[in-house]
Length: 342
Image (tube, rainbow, N blue to C red):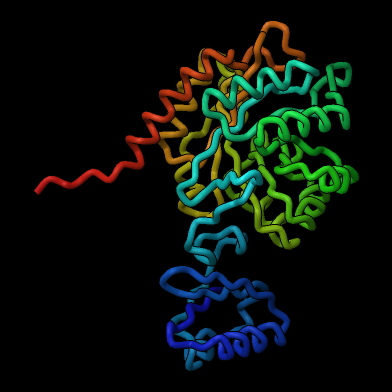
């Protein structure tokens, strides 16, 4: 349930209203927009008489919300959320960012890849220090050493780092090392203990859609994080598993405008994992940009044939630079104010 507050309401009246609601066992979420203030009421709101609320002097109107995700819901928070990823990099609300780098941190070549990616226009460095792999015999990542290499590159290039966290027990390590953005991967999209632990921090979380997850399941995963007090969530469409076998996954470009409609959270796309093949990554990235994504996560490697993981879907620095030029053109087209003909 949401209660829209009248513009004439004072801060004291608003505080009194919130206390009145919370004293009855409900949680509240206040969103102050440019045009109106909304109080989200979370709990079993069937026990609240909406006509009683509307009779209060500070309430303009009351509306029930049927979706189970409340904090992630645009109805509760009409304005786009802008997430501060560190190093002056913002995402959401018109701020578009590109996260680029290797699938796995491999060693000294990280700085070279990161430098070339930044020169081409990347604004954030992605790389996996901990890697979830289908086979227990595959490369699992460099662990804490990989985190340190990411942080060294971040410091030299003044770029925020995005890297995956897999275990709730590692959350404090990521916080202590000041990792800029913690990525929760597709395989952990419904690891509720992990979601709750990252939710207890204020570190931004890049939350990927599950392997076969629905849009609502992605939003409910975001709700787990936000319900613990962390509002800094970035949603990521990375393709879902379907009956199609010609690509690694099926890129659900529909999900981008759907998520933007349902939620105020920033939405990015990962065309690398969505397609699984270098030849398809750039077209999928262009489609995501045109669909209104707030950012992209793209794998880049200086020698994909020798990558320790997922080389088949990595762009070379030259290919990435070409993609960035075209992405900028698409961004200009979809964000331009075009005067309507009379």
